[in-house]
Length: 66
Image (cartoon, rainbow, N blue to C red; front, side, top):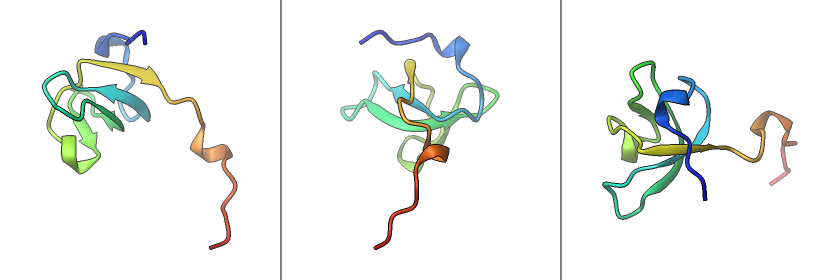
């Protein structure tokens, strides 16, 4: 996998984030304007070491009946 530099990550953009300092190193989430993760809560406050674009646009997904 090729990881993009976090300097290229747009704040608020949903992305596949990598955290080298964690055992569970890969999360889908977003960062704030300072490059610090805001969501999900398990990695909030950490700075990712790299990122990739999310392959699926959640806005295009149709709701499913439960």
